[in-house]
Length: 296
Image 1 (tube, rainbow, N blue to C red):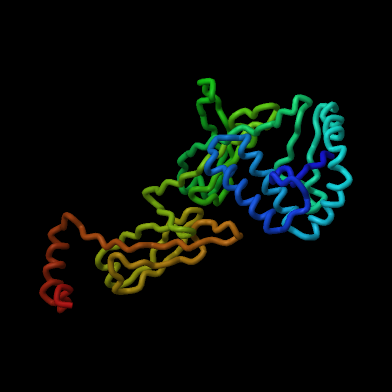
Image 2 (cartoon, rainbow, N blue to C red):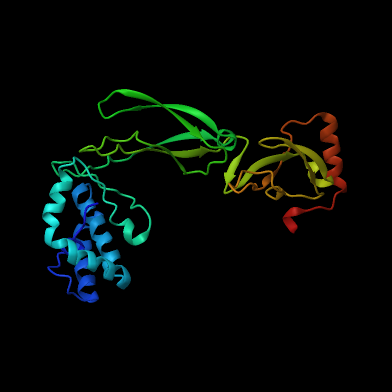
């Protein structure tokens, strides 16, 4: 285990410093090495991680006392200690674990030439799938051009019920790392396309229901084709175009074992061509009906 000099990381010459001095040093260095002002600079990114690690230990009075005991014992022979460890070829910094009881996410492995491994950058792309494919899930092959210009085929598994905009991660399929660092990941953003049959609205599936004028006026019972089964729906008398009738829990998967609703949007259709009999009946209806929608 390598002993890290957190005071040196925060550019403090001694451990005889106040909490306020620690905070000031941290703020200045965090601002200087923040990833937002060092875009693409992997060295600055690793430096920023060490600065945050040092501050988390030294800003807590309990962990600082524990660290200071080790600092007083180790700092005098720190140089020989690190050199002996480097000669072994590589080492793992689990020093952070002693204070927080868990492995640090970004473990640094340093080779005998003191080169820090750098993880490769992630690559992002996106694919379009249908609502039905998203609902049931699928395995899909995609071809992408690699950094050397060659085409490579990837097989991805899209889980059933994936949300629009969610990403599928292929570990290690991004850009290569440096100094023995791991490769980045390939992130595939899923774009769900609406179909002629369904439109996705959150967890609800929207579908159009076409009715004749007499069905809308008198009410009717119809069979709706849902995404995974047919369902029966009662349409009440006097329903209007644009109104919606909901069939609960027959929509899209919500990721919690339940589903949204299947929502039917009413479209009242009028025949473009009438038979003589139909024309006669419509004319008769016009004579006897007192319904005048433009007067309402």
